[in-house]
Image 1 (cartoon, rainbow, N blue to C red):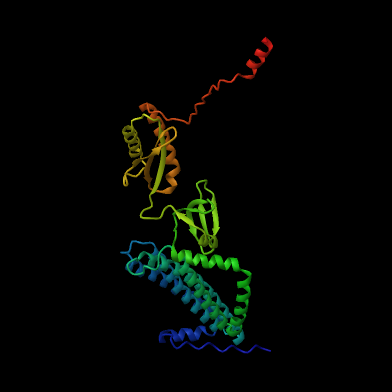
Image 2: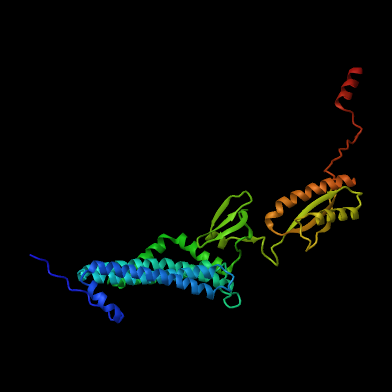
Length: 380
């Protein structure tokens, strides 16, 4: 028995009149026609991508930013992907598979397209938020510190929409899935209380911004370091020992945080306590300390260094040198260098640095000691 001949595929309505004849001829060879359609579609996708990049590059040539270029590349890739998908679907229809097989293949291609669009949408949303964060005069709410919050919301929206689209592609009723998701969400909420607490605390930290990336903070427990990352679950600090500490956001939200980079400026004040001997020239001491601080390269000149006499100690006149550095992380090394220079300068100036001393006075009560009493008894 001979297999029945496959009916040639009719030319699409959108096909130009000049191509109807070649289409009808090639329709008698479905695999060849499908291959030609696929190759032409991929070629159009590549050409279209190049045109989008070229024209879009001219439109954004006056913008001094790499973000627009990245966003334009994502748009061009998505356009090429959609054209390729249309060509692949048309090639499947040309071959003439059975209705069920054709439907499965098209659904598979559409599912892959949706998954690829999810990735592109997430990247585009992140770049778009970065662009909006730089337009401070129009979108003040979108800043560097709030980008993770908006990014999470957009990610949830994109994934939710994509999941709904995938269910509709495969003719799955989403109502039952939504009901199951509600029950599962309640169970997960009880099982992951700590995780949810960290998550909501991360929202509040990002919105309230008690600290930001690059700030130098000190916690109640004594941990101190530079904020390297503010995430939705935890905050990471880089200590002066180059050790990274991860602190859950729930603890950060309920503990007292000392932001040494906050206030009117980022500059940090250093206090150097100096004691000199009684009888020293106090004006000379003040002038010497201010000169040492002003000559240091790292010490800020605005505000200028200043010296205050704090009181009369048990064995010294107590002074305090107040000066500022640009960043809190510079405090340790600058304090060390100032102490070294002050010690040398005081020695050169002949100003004594006292140390605690105690004088012991022995009082003669007039009573004979034990040896004297024994000697008198032997003489008698």
